[in-house]
Length: 217
Image (cartoon, rainbow, N blue to C red):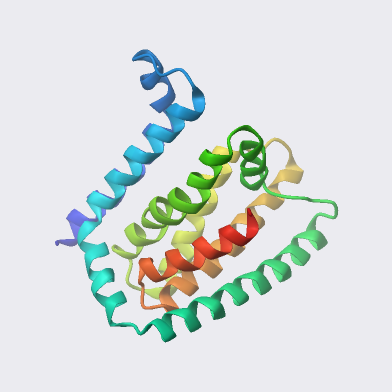
C-alpha cells in the first residue's frame, strides 16, 4: 500500500473515532436507543469492527507471525512483560506522587471505576475487549503503519494517546496537568514494549488483557 493511502487510512480511523465518541449517542437516540450504556456499547462495537476491517491485512500478518511462536515462548514473554508493566506502574506512580502529592488517579481510570458501579458487563467489555483491541489498533497499529523510525513512532504515539485522553478526560484545573504525565509515561512504555515484541499487536493485546484483568478484577 502506498504511503499516502496509509496516511489517509490513519486520519480516517481517528476521524471516525472522534465522530462516534461525540455523536453516537445522539444518532442512536434519534432512532429510539436512549439507554446510554446500550448506545455506548453499540458505538464501541461498530468502531471496533471498523478498525479491524481497516487494518485486517496487518492483523492477518500478525496472526501469521503469532502462529510461528511456541506456546512456551508466548507464555514466557507474556509473564515477563506483565511483571515489567506492574513494576513500571509502581515507579511511575511514585514519580507522579512526587509531582503531585495526594493525586489518586487520572480521569479515565476514575471513569472506569465509576462505570463499573453502573454496568459491570460493559466495563468488562470496555477494558478487556475494546481497550485491548480497538484502541491498540488506533494508537499503535495505525501510527506504526506510517512511522517506521522507532523514536519518532514512540513519541508520536505517546503524544497522540495523551492528547486524546486529556481531551476526553478534560482539564479542570492546573493541578490536573499532572494527568499529562500519568498518560504520557505509560504510553511511552507501551510503545516501546510493542516494538520490542516484533510490532505484533496480537501479542501485545495478550499483555494488556492480562494486565487489565488483574487491575480491574
